[in-house]
Image (cartoon, rainbow, N blue to C red; front, top):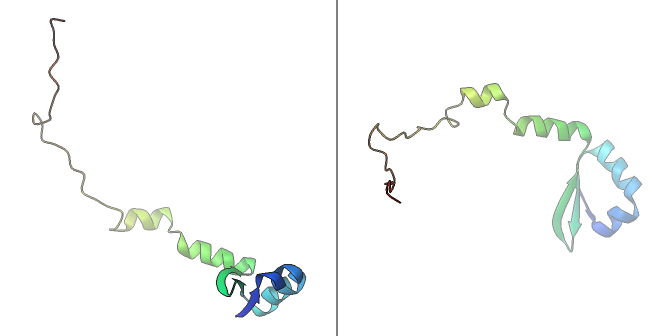
Length: 85
């Protein structure tokens, strides 16, 4: 992956984009630190679909299930109501 300083990426955006399409993801650096990556749209869609589980996967996974705590009947705390106000 080629790293582009932000000034070069801005000044030569067309070349930056062509490099992304022909060579793959391109890194953008800001003051020498990695800041962003330009990726082809097909790669982006693949990453998005891999990162987001489907509804079926969520319903079948054990991670999504928790124990629901319901207090036993008659043990809930209630406020007393003053009937003679």
